[in-house]
Length: 363
Ligand SMILES: Nc1nc2c(c(=O)[nH]1)N[C@H]1C(S)=C(S)[C@@H](COP(=O)(O)O)O[C@H]1N2
Ligand SMILES: [Mo]
Image (cartoon, rainbow, N blue to C red):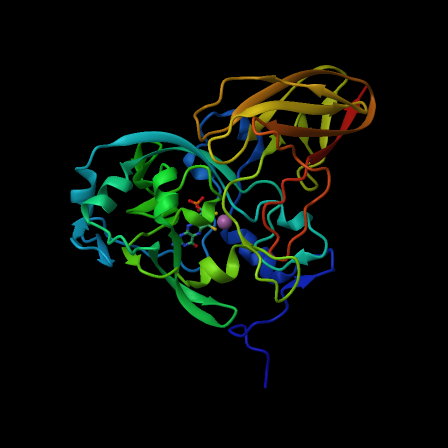
C-alpha cells in the first residue's frame, strides 16, 4: 500500500534542507517582518499566522457560542450578545509554541519557524470568567473545552481544533473572548468572528473560530491537548504540557539586507541597535544583554507595552569594518534567562535560544 498523508509518517529529519511540505506550510503561515519590531503594536497584516487546517469563513450575523456539558445554566450566545458584555482592550504579545523549531537538530517536521512567529496586537473583547460563572459550572467540573470550527487530520486523527483550561487556570489567567484586533473586526485568518486570547501563554491556547465551550467532569482528551503540545524527550514519553511563553528576545535586523540571502550590511560608525523582549505569565523583562564584539553589554529598556506585551530594548554600537556576530539575550523578573543552545524536545516547542545575526560592516 502507498504511504498515505493521512497516516502517521516521519516526525523529524536530520536533513538540513527543508522539505516541500515544510515550504508549503511556511507559505500559508506567514511570520512577522522583523524590521517592524520597532512598532509597539504589530501592523495587523504582519501579525504571524498559524492555522492548522483550512480557514473557516463564518458569518458574524449567524455565529453563536454554545455553552454545554456540566453547566447548571447552559446557554447559547449570539455574537451581538457577547459584544454587549463589558468591553476591554488589552495589548497582548502572542507567540507560537513552535517559534524557533527550524533551529532544532534533528528538526521536527512541522511548521518550520525560524524566529518570526511573534506579534503584538490590541485585542478587544470581554473577560471569559464571568460568562463561565453565569452558566453555573458544577463543582465536579475538571476542564473547560474550547472548540474551534476548523476540522482536519493530524497523524491520521480527524478532529476539530480544540484546547482546554482547568477551572484553576481560568481563575488565574486573564482569558478574553475576543472579536476585535487593532481597532477592527478580527480577520478571517485570525479567528473571525470570535476567538480566545490567553495572555501569557503560547498561541495554541488562543482558540480561533470559537464555537463551543463544554464543561467536562473529566480531563479533556482532544488531540491538540493530549497529543500535540507537550514537551516530550523521546517517543513514548508522556511529556508535560506546553503552557506559558518562555523568555525570549529578538533584534531588529540592522542596516540593509541582501534581497535573497537576507544578509545584513551596515556602515562603520555609530549604529543604534534595537529589538524586543518578552516572557510569559505576565512576568516582566528584567534585562537584555547584547553581544557586541565578543562582550555581553546591557541594553536600555523601555516600559513594557502592557503587562502581557513585549518590551523594547536598544543599545548603541560602534561598528568597525569586518564581519560581526551579534546576539541578544533576555532575562525575566523570575530569573529565567534565554539559553545559548536550543532546548531539545520532539515537537520542537519553546526554542528560546538566543538569536544570532551576522552583520557585515562596510568601511
Ligand atoms: N481553531 C484554531 N485555533 C487556533 C489554531 C488553529 O489552527 N485553529 N492555531 C493556534 C496556534 S498554534 C497559534 S500559535 C495561534 C495563532 O494565532 P494567529 O494566527 O492569530 O497569530 O492560534 C491558535 N488557535
Ligand atoms: Mo502555535
